[in-house]
Length: 313
Image 1 (cartoon, one colour):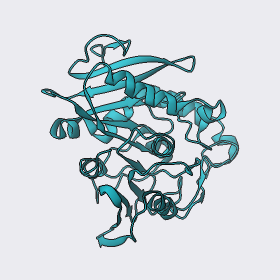
Image 2 (cartoon, rainbow, N blue to C red):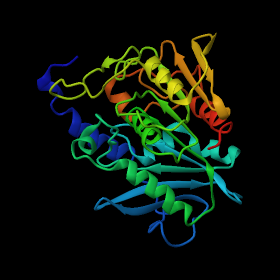
Image 3 (cartoon, rainbow, N blue to C red):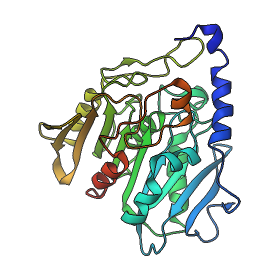
Image 4 (cartoon, rainbow, N blue to C red):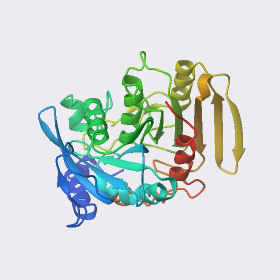
């Protein structure tokens, strides 16, 4: 690792790099009040005031979508944004075949308050649970949403946010955190189906738990959470599941527990994979830090949608 003096410029450089490489969508991207007007087909952007801050979310609506549709809320990781998440994780193509809506909210200063992590939202105690639930409600007043089929997923800090949403609300039929961990109180959670996907070699959010690899110039870890299998065990207890069964195919191990009322808790671990969304494109942060290409042993987006499609609230 480079010395602290040479890392001091890392965070501002990341912000500039992501602003240049991620950017916003083109001029055809409508931006407006989510309480009024029709929701266009394709891509659009909406603004909502929450907690005294103007917040934005992007939306993808497939062609020919009729009737109440499922909704997937996809939350970017730290240093990312909605445009990067839409480009990297291929949810739009999945929505075209699965016939559902995809919401890409933007974190405040490119991060989410997931509990004890991360960044300015956590330090300033930004109400991201309130923002996400308000955005979903505002969208539902403009376009029919199947309220029994609302789902949340995210990468890294976004995965932690998905877990917090499930811990503190009952709006989601299922969640799917990728490369994230539980960093909030979940003692009052209601039963929810959960799919975790995690690389065994993840150094930022270690599979065995504990402090992740430091990204800050002062050497402070960005996350310090429980072991990933312990997160799955927490949700098995919340959901009242039976003991899990395990299968392995190549480098992918799937641990599944069946739960009452058709729910399930599943943990998919990928040997040799680091802090990544398997099957995605390597993002600008990973490129800058020299991280390996995402594993192709699993298409996380397709796997998550197949899990979501089996669960209703």
